[in-house]
Image (cartoon, rainbow over all chains, first blue to last red; front, side):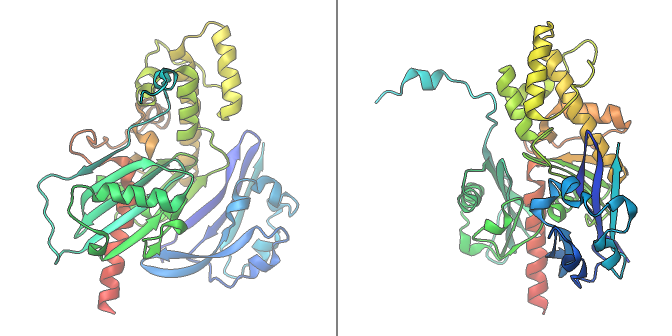
Length: 98
Length: 303
């Protein structure tokens, strides 16, 4: 299987903050979207190998402030609700505050 | 009527050249698969027209406040001198920041997929890492030999270290944007990078450096260095694999490209000679979109 790994987020002076979604593992079930207390996730249609595929993504609005949006879920513990909700294990969090 | 001279004398240092081009020696017939890609970015809008999957013409213009109009302006410009009209297109794909607002497009495709595809078209199958430095964001994309995306990272937190940031700096230093790369290299020794690429803070820091007696060139070198460090970090995160190429408006900034090469210890593939007859790395996304348009049209014909 050929994967597409999408990193949403950023590194700034204070650390690295990314939600990483494997769009091939993601089955588009939307459970993570329902579990996210900040409504930071959405289902998005993407063209992959000329087929439309529905996969989870971080909303445009939250990509720029993910450090603040996601901090209450303590993503560094890898027990964030989105990560736990994902059965195919398509979501990962990278949280490295300096 | 004469224009007031004050307006005429005002130099806009940030302003880059908008232009269009038709590839010489190519002809089209109604039997050809004619497709277009329209890439509406935050700062520039690009349209590319392809005949049977080969670049034929393009137009690059500044994005206005209205995405549909910017898309139309870019496409109209790409059409100029080709004899083509809108109805000759078999398929049009919209991409970029404003992709959902491209009225003539049959479909919207994310710019990530389009940039990887377009870079593969411009430089060939050896491309594995694409750094796209756009007007308001930086993307690091890993792709395979077919131009398919494997992994990507988009840093769109703010305009720090992007094309728009460079425009602001060009205005501050009163250096035309198209010369900014060369001038940033006119230092005997590379100064330490400014501590923050944030445009607002960097401006303040630059003023402080001027007071310390730094030259324009040195201040610019310090800012460009900081941008290059930030871009190199992004590439590190997706994982650098050769060959590396740079697309987007800042691909034309030699000060950025040469510093990234030093920081990462690899050479980028050489830039096509876009000033004469080469493809412009700014239209990578539009070219990729036009290629997807062709593939989607052919797929629709088969089914």
